[in-house]
Image (cartoon, rainbow, N blue to C red; front, side):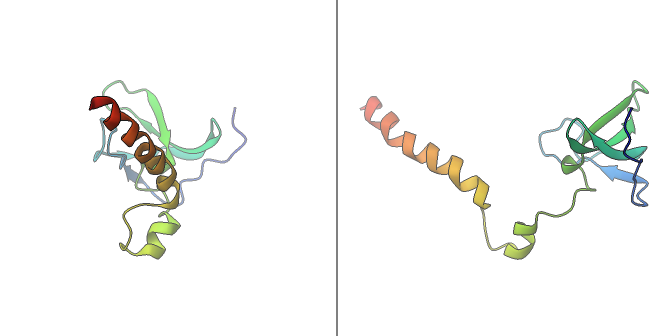
Length: 101
């Protein structure tokens, strides 16, 4: 049982915004919002199964905006945490090109 109060911040509905989630773009009535499994989550009733489901808050329209993206104001393509994986991929790329020749 969670000791965190059900905090909906006055919101009644949310939209799934994660681009790869099968329900992306769909809106649902918000039952509750609380911390579970180490992260802030939203809880809603699945309209097909009528079971209570949850998603990370970050995958929804209720997530606060990414501070970096707000400050960048559309002037950047990558966030700082995206550069490391991109750098690793680019470092591996020349090795693959040499193998193909």
